[in-house]
Length: 246
Image (tube, rainbow, N blue to C red; front, side, top):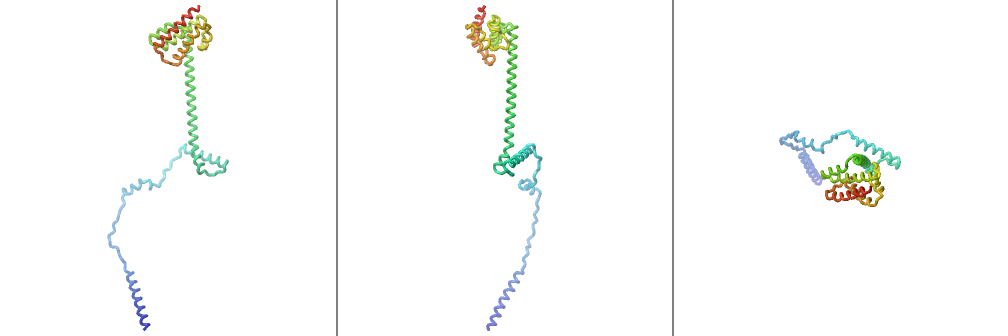
């Protein structure tokens, strides 16, 4: 009886295995129609233009600045290698080496600016010196050859009171030279003439007109008719003193 039960149980198990094998052999087929998708050039163009998909690198020739930086970087590395034994720059040292070319460029620009400023300053100084020489040479001609009173009258007629002050001052120098109060010479300064004046009554008014002359003529200050008329009184006063020196 036990054998019968065993064979029945074995038969049931075997039937289950065969059934499972039969089910696994069933094949399913996809009968839907295939849809073929095409990719046009317009679809690809957006990828061509996207920099994320551009893998070609444009190679350009290094500029002189690139060559200079490369040369300087190599030079600095050799210096640090020889002195400190550093074969490769990193961190602060690498940043410093990258900064060196720009520091040198800044120093060079500063030197060039100072150089051209010095040239311009020297040129202006020389031009001023030449102008002064021309002015002194012209003064010599006026004192020795011109009727200064006529020149004063012409300047006043044109209302050029600055020029009138100049001629009035030269008139005083000419009169003092003729009276031998001073010895007029081309290289002398107005202070030299002041030191030559022996009479105290001439020293103060001459100092006053000398200051006015320097301010208006050499200082290029504008002077009005009212200011000139005040100065004219001093000029006439000193001319009167000179004339009485006889």
